[in-house]
Amino acid sequence: MSSDVVVLLIVLIVCFVIFRKLNKSKTRETTVVSAGKNKVNYATKQAIESQRKQRQVASEVTTGAEQEELPVPKEFLDFSLSSYKALTSAHSAEIEAMLADFSKPHPLMLKLTSGIFEQKELSELIKSDPDITAKILTVVNSSQFSLQQPIKDINHAIIFLGVTQVKNIALQFAMQNSVEFSHPAQAKAYQKIWSASYLASQLALLLSKSLGKENASELSTLCLLLYLGDLVLLSAKPELAENYLAKNSFFKRLGNTQNIAKTNAAVVGYMLAKVWKLPTTMAEDMRYQYRPFTNSLASAKLEEEQVKDLMLCYIVCRLSDLVVFQGHAEGISFEALDFKKSNNLEFYHLAKNVSADRLSEIAKELQANNFTVKARELIARAVTS
Image 1 (cartoon, rainbow, N blue to C red):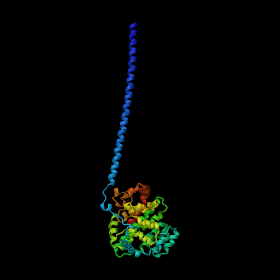
Image 2 (image 1 turned 90 degrees about the vertical axis):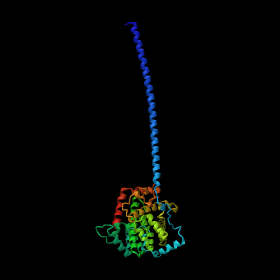
Image 3 (image 1 turned 180 degrees about the vertical axis):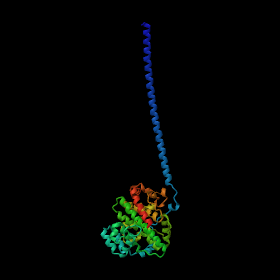
Image 4 (image 1 turned 90 degrees about the horizontal axis):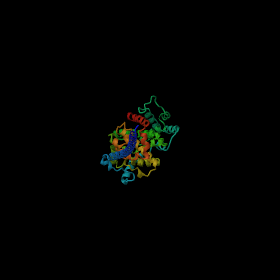
């Protein structure tokens, strides 16, 4: 091989090596640039996604604010709840006159509200009054309970229904003993109040037990007695009968009552509880029972546990009202407590308390399938009885 050929080969090899090195360097630069672009693109995507989420949250907040500003009747916003503290001497004297016919409670009344009973103790107490015994057996054997075999004595009734339910039925008859009606419409309205109070007591017992509350029986009895003021007003003011028969909402019934009687069932019930010397806590609960409607319960300065119990009773009483007074048999769902979904003004302020600890457990239980099924069974009985 000539020297010229050798030199040419060496030159070609050197050129090839230089070309390879240049090409690798360019590839590395391209890779670095590409990686940089990818980093920029990723950061840009993150920023865009963050902005999108911020816009979404802002939109949700705006929507929530708009929902909270649903149109509410002016008369509701301007509504003033009559209170015991604000009674004038004239109004107080008028209520005391109403209570004159109720000044002597049934002999069983105080005993039935004094505490928790064992089966034998309750049986002996009820059997001491043959009239109430007969009335209880009549109710227990009615279509309301759909029994296959008749119940012939109080002991059997207590075994079948339980101590709390039999005690509450006895309480209702003890309350009825003090009531006299001069107009047929009053008697019909009384039956409505009876049904609403009994359903409320049953729902309170069911809900309280579901929540594991130790005072479930007492709350059930309390819900029954929260309608005591309604009975007094109905007896004293025959014109109020239509208030319970016309499928009025709670707000309308309350407004009509205050317009006609210049007071409400909470005030009257509280004053009667004092006359009858019912337990102090029970009397206080009767006094403040409507405060959740105006979101003014805080000013009562009650213990937190008493506030929770009162809120529970308010909820089951208003649900019972929906069923009995307004004919909404399907009303036992948490949505019924949501003003935005149901338009029930009695629950307008409730949403402000739902997120709080005092109502979170109640709200959860009201949506539980087990509770709903049992509650609907109670409602079906109340509607068909």
